[in-house]
Length: 199
Image 1 (cartoon, rainbow, N blue to C red):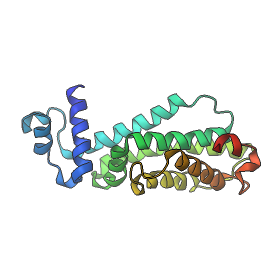
Image 2 (cartoon, helix red, strand yellow):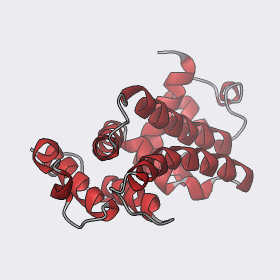
Image 3 (cartoon, one colour):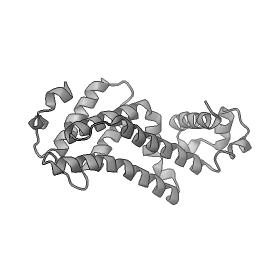
Image 4 (cartoon, rainbow, N blue to C red):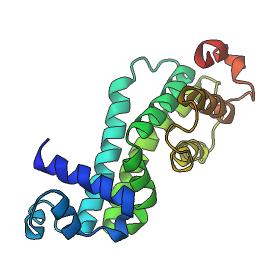
């Protein structure tokens, strides 16, 4: 693990444990075996650190989806794959997901705008899936559909305790709800995908 990776890892652990406001750069430096002044070679301020943590998480989330998605010709299959991928990534990096959701408000305006633009880029991936389904007469969406779906998925990370429920059941439930929200028909089985997708 490189020094910057160690700093990020320790920062995530400390912020998840104590909250962003309660963590100082001096405390972070000590956890990494550094002098406080040495940390400024990597981050000029706590705001820079927080922006880097959130931006790195969002960048990895979008890149992971782009690398994992293969055939996007079927928007129904692509939507359920997107739901599963988002939940799996979020579960694997739950602490970072919490920081990205809860501490965005702590960023200064210019940094917040940068992160919000990254979030919009990821949401565009979902909007494109929904738009493809709409063109094929499978989905019906409005300007809030993608936001509602992502809010549901992210909110589950904040609400659920790790390991509280069967993860596969959670994924299947979210896939079913997502299809119901997006579908022209309230029954996702209309598309003939309910058995293979939710089995």
